[in-house]
Length: 237
Image (cartoon, rainbow, N blue to C red):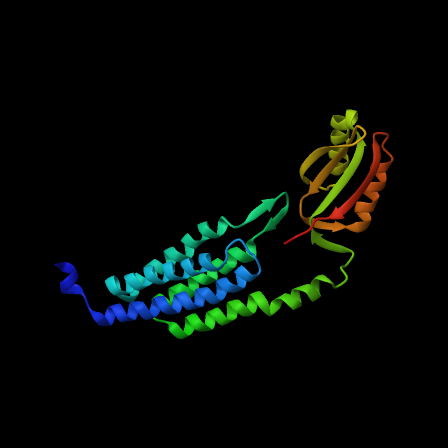
C-alpha cells in the first residue's frame, strides 16, 4: 500500500511537533481574545493556527521549501476572507479590524510552525500578545489627550422636528450639508413621541472643524421646521 511504503516516523514526528507548537501558540493568542469577549476567540484562533500549520507542513513534505512558499502565499490571501467575516460596518463606524488582524497573525504563527520555524512562531506569538495587551494602556492614554481644532473623525448631525415635516426636513438638511461641503454617508429618520421625528445624518469621515460644525448647527436651528439640532462625534472601535 502507498501509505505503508511512504510512511516515515521522522516526518510524522516533525508534523506532530509543528502542530503542538501551532496549537499552543494559537491557544495563547485565542485565550486573550476570548477573555476580552471578541468575536474570534480561543477556538477560532487555534483552528486558524493549526490549519495554516498543516497546509504548510504538508507542502514541505510533498514539494519541499518551494512548495511551502507557494502555500504560504495562499494562506496569506485566503485568511483575508475569514477576517472579513468578523469586520462589522455600522454607517461610517467599523469594528472588528483588530480581531481580523489577530486572525491574520495566528495564521502567520501556524505557517511558521508548519515550516519548522519554531522559534519564529514563539517570538511572533509574544509580539502579538504584546500588541493586544501592552499597547492598550497607551491607546487609552492617547484617546484622553486633548484634540486639536481639526481632527479626522466621523460625526453625526442630529436634527429634531415635526413628523409631518420629515421629508422636507431631510431635503433641507441635505441641501445645507451640500452647501457646507460636508458629504453625508447616510441620512436616517426615526419617529419620536408627540409626533416628532429625529433625523440623523452620518457624515463621511473627513477633516472637520468644530467651529464649522457649530456654525452649521446654528444655521439649522434657524429653520422653521427644526425644533433642535446638535452634532456628536461618532464612537469608534
